[in-house]
Length: 366
Ligand code: 0PR
Image 1 (tube, rainbow, N blue to C red):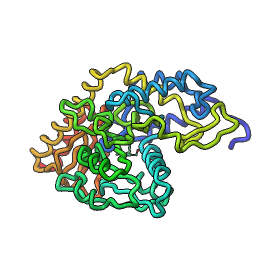
Image 2: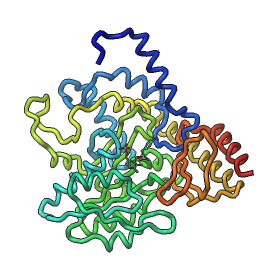
Image 3: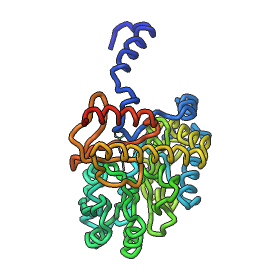
Image 4: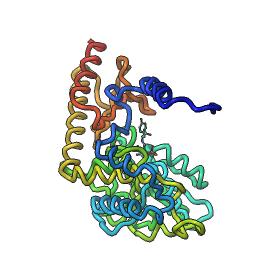
């Protein structure tokens, strides 16, 4: 730390330089985050100092968090569902598994049954909670095989996990079948819709994945992905609004005497940002955003296939994957564990960027 502070001008000149080292969003095709919507930025700035970790001090902000949960619960077909705002999918998934663990405390060697496509946050969660992770193979279309999932469940299984919008291939697992299995076997069923939760409800033909299916217990959904909020904004939604209280611990000197969240200090700013986007765009606006992303995904797939670069699979949401050797600089893409090229058509990836990428790729493969 400097002994004597320097001028604001100096600091921000240095920061500007550093910011220029960041990747330009015009070339980012690999990210599940995007440029936040202007109303999210405005709300974020307005609530910058708020801390949901001590909600009694910020009653207004805390009620906006509840409003966000209500909006998402209603979108997921159960207005009475509960939940709270997390820092993102990782925290939501950890908390869902904590809920599962406390609900079956009698199990000595607990396991969870997850698709092989599960996000690496489940690995972290299993580590923290000492859970055995049982990966279930995928079918030809990179979706969890429900029959094989059923075979993996035993008396020590505390949670079945399905993914609605997989990180790598953008697939939706057979959530309806899995929900039936979970219901029949009496295990908690967590749906990781961190990405798909803000996409699937706005598709022309939404795939069932939410509380409309009786077996679904909890859902992770991230406004900081397709919800275009500022970072960090995730949500864990629970069918039973009281379920979270099973995680309560005493917080004697706070404005609330008990707390079930994982983080202590929690930013209100991105939470209000998330609500601002939903209320500003409404269902109609969200449908338009999602429809644009899906059209761009289709255009990208069609364009790549014209160059002889085939899709790995036809995705359910806006993630396109290809069998491909490489792509030109300076485009930033990602590669799946199986070696497929992966491109996420986020809201900042406008049609003109897809066309520019296709032009560069076409020249490379000509
Ligand atoms: N569940 C699913 C299905 C996800 O795709 C992700 C993240 C998570 C959970 C974890 O969410 P948090 O990262 O919010 O805790 N998926 C992206 C990924 O790992 C996150 C990401 C976003 C990565 C932007 C890179 C990036 O530039 O690929």
